[in-house]
Length: 208
Image (cartoon, rainbow, N blue to C red; front, side, top):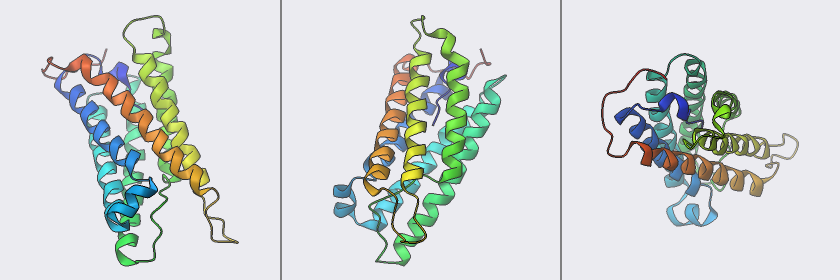
C-alpha cells in the first residue's frame, strides 16, 4: 500500500485522513494473521477484521486518488484498483468463514492481482521521490518502507498459494508472517505521515 507522500504533501486535512485510514487498515492486517488472535475471536470474527481493514485501505486510497495529480495520478489509481481487489477477496473469505465452521482462518493471503497492483504502485511512488534522499522531508523513507510492505504482501500471496495436487498451502507460516510484517510496514509509513499534518487542517491543495 503505497502512501505516495510526495503527492500528499501540503494537503492538510485530506492528507491527515489518508494517514489515519491507512493506519487503521494496517492494524487490522497486522493482528489478523496471528494464531493467537484467531483462536481468541474465532474464524468468523477474524474474517470480519480483514474485510474491515480492506475497507479502510480503500477509503484512504480513494482520498489519495481524488487529491492526486500529474504523475501521481496513475500510481494512486493503480493502488485504488488493488484495494478493490482486496475488498472482494476479503469479503469472499469472510463469507466462507461464516458459511463453514471448518474453514481454517489461520492464514489470509493477499489476493494476487491486488498484490501486483500494490507493488506497481509502490515502485512508482518510490521512483517519484527517490531524488529526495538527501532532504529532511522524509518522503523517500516513507516510500521505501511502504514499498517493503508491498513486497511482503507479494511474498504472502505466493506463500499462500494452494497446491492443487495436495490441497495444502505452499508455506503457511511464511504467508502469515509476511502478511503481518507487510502490514507493519504500512502502519509505520502511515504513522510517519501524521505528525507532518497534525495541527495543520485546511483544504486540499494542488499537487506539488
